Length: 389
Image 1 (tube, rainbow, N blue to C red):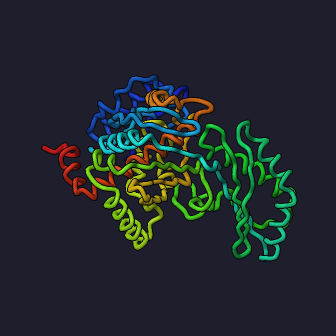
Image 2: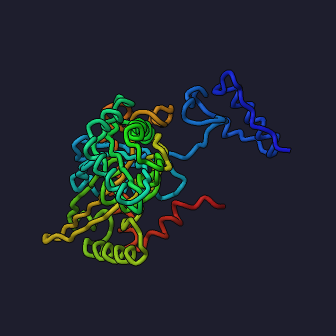
Image 3: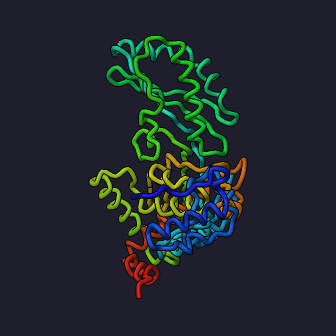
């Protein structure tokens, strides 16, 4: 008969409570997780981040850089923490950072900022749904007031409307300050929707989240619009640098980019880049971001151009980058340290972090793209990524 996982009803975030669960795991599985049970911070610091706290998952962390960023919020050189178990990753990003640094740095621009919650309202007919859409537009000021009454940092920017059958999907767009904003947007949208349901009698069905915010999923709507931060990173690399650092030419890299875009189009991908999830996942784990958001945050659109002087222009647009410098996992001890390395911990730093993440992604795209062209990709993994006897 299965036993319940032990919990301390008085205080479940103590070393003793965690050790009791370690003992439980050992009794139930025959394996005592000694490394899981070895951690340097007070168990109470995990309160609000996890339940049944038992220990930690220790992921190797390396530093890449320096990365030179010419942003509006991030300016200068940064050493980027990457938590990963994939050999060659840190080396590849460091090589891309060397290339872009010698080219003058990566220019990064935050284009837009919004976090969504998307409730659905159902009616007896499509005409009634249409009437409701008009009512929402006419009562926008009151809806905004109700939504913002539930939060000190969030602001309701606008509401997009999409109709299908006899349903209206309202896509609430919030700004969320330095937090990622998913919980805030849910609470604020609920406050607004409760008022809407009190005021509008003909609603027959309501669902607070109807999958149109596409939380933790890549989607076309977020590619065209924005979820989190919409960020563009770009660089122009002279031909001589491409040859000296990457051992290839702009012409070969550009042709490979065209072939890759064609292959991606044939496969139906929503990302024509090479490895944006690698940088984003590694930085998210290191810096206390919600790892589930890698699914949407790693959506990326690459554009490249061979310029008349022979240099190579390369940009990457990330339309749904969800990052935070306050709240969530950012306050955990090791994650806080990683954010502090980047001077990105706390309030007023979230766009700076977004710029650093996007610049890092760009560097990895250039490095891996060149490795494929020069046919050193497999050899590099074989040399740096092998830990087997």
